[in-house]
Length: 394
Image (tube, rainbow, N blue to C red):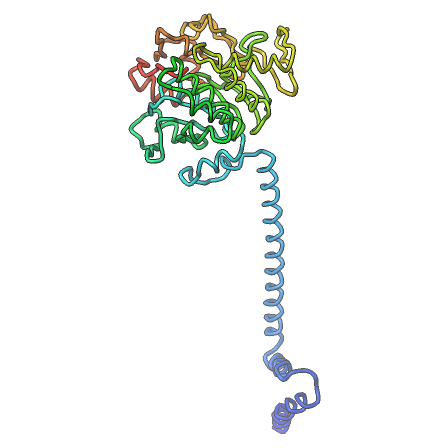
C-alpha cells in the first residue's frame, strides 16, 4: 500500500520536476510512464507505425523518380520518331490545320475540283498512304470544302466517311488565294483567267502542290498513287524515265530552295496551252539546270545537289503506254519489290476502266492488299461494279 502511495506521489512530482529542470517536454515523460504502465506492446506499435510511415515515404520518392525517368524516355522517343500527333490520344476534331501541318512531315494529297465524294482510286491512294505511313499525318486538301462545310466520319459520302474515320487522315479545305500568299505564285494567280485555261484543273494542282510543300514540307502524292512501302529518303524527285522527272510524287523539307526555284520558273515560263509545262516539264527543266542528267543503269538512283533522283522502278514499274496492264489478269502477279508506290496513270484512262470485284485483275489485288477498307466499302459494297472509279483530276 505504501509502495502504491509512493508511486502516485512520484507521478505528481516528476512532471513538475522535468518541466522546470529538464530539456525534455512533459509529453515525452508522460509517454514513457504510459509505456512502463501498459507494457512493451504499445512501444512496439508506435515503432511499427513509424517504420511503415518511413517505408511509405521512401516508396513515394522511388515512384516519383521512376515516373520522371519514364516520361523522359517517352519524350526522347517522341522527338526521335516525330510521331507527335498520331502517338497521342487526342481527338482529331480538336486539332487544327496548323497543329497537324506544323510537324512538317505530312503525306499530302490535293483535290482541286469542287467534288466532295472521292472516287475509289482517290480513296485507295489516301488509305494506302495512311497504312504505310501510320506514324505520320496523311492530309487531304479539298477545294470543295470550306469553313462552313463540316463533314466527318458520319457523312453520307461513303469514301469521305471511311477516310475521316482513319486515325492519321486529316481532311482540310483550302483556298488558293490564301495558299499562294508569300510565294511567287500569288501575282500569277491574280493575273491568270482560269475560265480561259484548258488545263486549269491540272495547272492549279501543279501550283498548289508546290506551295504546300514549300510552306509545310513532307511528301506530295497524286491521288492515283497506291503506296506499298515507305520512301526512305527526304529530298527526292521521282524519275518517270531516264533524264525525265515526274511531279506526281516528290518530297522536300519546308522552305527548300529547289521548290522556291520551281515556283519562280512556274511564273516566268508559264504556258497553259502545253499540258505538263507547269508540272513534269518544269521539274525536269529545274533538275537539268542543276545537273547533267544521264541514263539510269540497273536500278541505281542518281543524286543532284543533295536531291535524290529516284529510278523509275520505284514508282513507275509499269510505264504510261502500258497503263492497261493494271486492269488485266496476270498469270503471275508482279511483286513490285523494287517499288515504294505505284502510279496508275489515271489521266490515261479515257476508257474509264474500273475495279471490278472478283475479276482477279492486278488493280483489284492491289486494292485488296493496300486499301482493303476502300475495297470492301466502295468495290464490294457497290455490287462489284466499281462504278465510282472515275477520277477526273489525274
